[in-house]
Length: 62
Image (tube, rainbow, N blue to C red; front, side, top):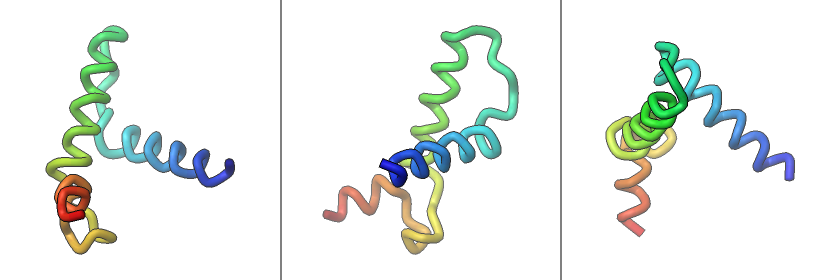
């Protein structure tokens, strides 16, 4: 599905430009960096499209 690919590309772009600014030393550190980035994105980073709420806050509201 082309829409699933667009979502994956969006997530990869956000990770590359906003979160993964340093090169990891190994695979374990890379996984940790990605996990921390996802947590920040979902729990701490407000989103304009969500009226400056976090995705977790919007999800919990439902």
